[in-house]
Length: 83
Image (cartoon, rainbow, N blue to C red):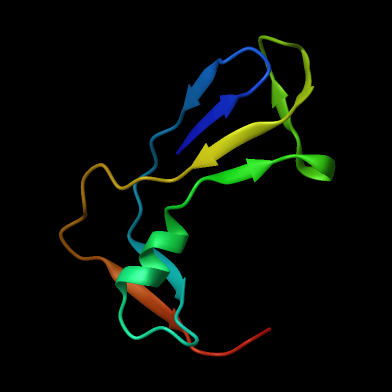
């Protein structure tokens, strides 16, 4: 995942090995759309601001997940219902 502080531009990168992902597929015709939502840029603001180590304050930031290298076996859990 990558988080970019919008105040100072500092980027924080974290690599995690994932073996499974959860996709909300309600009203989707294929996995392409839910996978796109899973990988979209999330804005961290309001009560969910990013604690930037360089700025030393809570800042608005962008967070994005990406798959650098897929595992040999990837488990995809399909969420077919609303909360």
